[in-house]
Image (cartoon, rainbow, N blue to C red; front, side, top):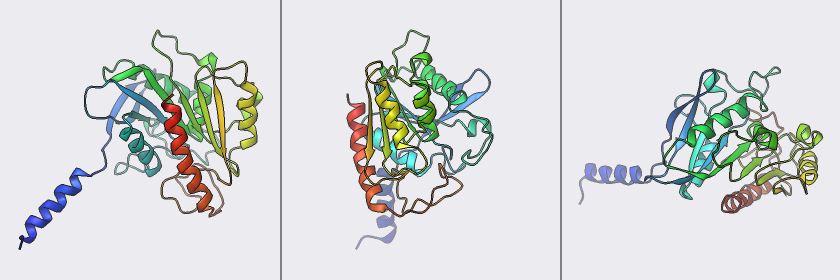
Length: 275
């Protein structure tokens, strides 16, 4: 009979072998201050395709013990398993701010500070030897997705000689301003939103994307039937408002339609990044 301590050692060894990857904090210079970010990187020298992932208004993490919230960690690990590095800038924590979902006067604007954070993250990645410089993509949720829409506009093109973003994926952004301004994109952009989204507007996003046809890089929208805002949140049973949620949403409990949308979005993201 194997001694109990030996069995415990083997159990711990197996658990460590299957442990979730731990991100590395990196500091990225800004014009004023430092942008803290969490980096998930595959083992090896690369070069690796890389995704800059942009958190929603609830922020990136839940504190020092949880630097990356489950939804973003789940996506980062999924992308990592596909061979991608993932960089998650912390736009709020870097400025010593908490969640901004219910803040009337936001100090960090999607179209201003967060676009600057995207540019700084891209510039930092262009200097890393392990990055496939022509395969850097953007991915964002809610407020982060809105920042993404501003960042991919032709007017926001990077002024350096490096390759542009390969692709962009926006989960349920607020499309109303962009639709009214005649939005277009310079890189292939995919918008993912639930048909029953009661925070963002599926109609405005469809208008925005359809309005870009013929005068823009490829833009596509996928509207998931029956799905609500935040449909891709990992292990979330109900759309309950909380301090870390991206918006105050009523409890719908449409678990089935959100689960289907979450699974479909995983396939849509993988296909878009593999283009």
